[in-house]
Length: 338
Image (cartoon, rainbow, N blue to C red; front, side):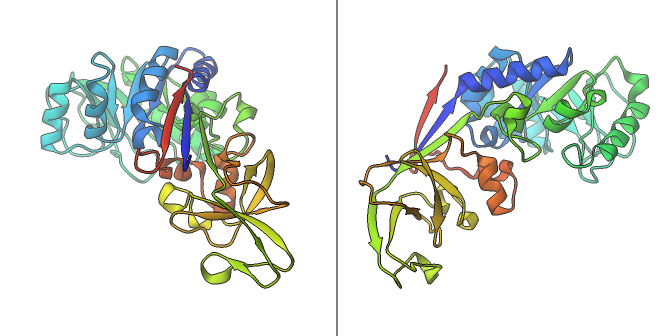
């Protein structure tokens, strides 16, 4: 078992139901962009809909088309821009598009996006709303870090759109859905929380969420370093005394980043530190005793979260999750809880 990624769709369904409960009448729209944040969009899409999500949201038209064959009747909203050829594809596939600039295309349901403070995609003011406009939206910049500014954005959005309350209005992301009731409006677009990861970099269990992804490997070699011996490129770890280390056949090509030196994984039921330089296809873990090759190493799961690793790497769980490679060439992928 070089690298095994397990996706628990039962946990995802429970997360969806938890978010539906939190939203208290607003619809939950499941964000599945970037292959469902690395969790597998095809598997997660059906589970999210089964558990109560109303709409599937993706970043690009090709992402939407990949889902359309599997889910011919689902509402699928493309959050990113689309060129003329993609608009034609969207029209044929009955997708919904986001308009952040330019003109509103004909013959396809559209959600017009206002920039209320993100300073990225979005219009400064509403254009003339044709009949194909079915929704109005904005995106919150600081719902996870500065709720006061997020509330200002929600207030601006409400002021600009109150005259069009017959249209579906949506602003909340995962953080806002969990913390800012006034942002929930008609629907909330939740991504990271679906997968049991915290938008706040904290323990998602505090919000009643369960991790969906777990990741395991094994020790393929165990060796004793004598004082002065090192492991890995650059000799970043040099043993000061007799030290057992285990080599795990996972590296930054698999999404276990080079800056994860110092994080912890579970070996034989115990947390053990990653030492030395993480290489493309391997990392080393310091052991407290000799263990047999083949001993299971849990990289994510059993109390070690993606957010734990993210704090070591000085990044966010979103980035690490999206970077995990579960392709057949690098990993075994298992889906449970169907």
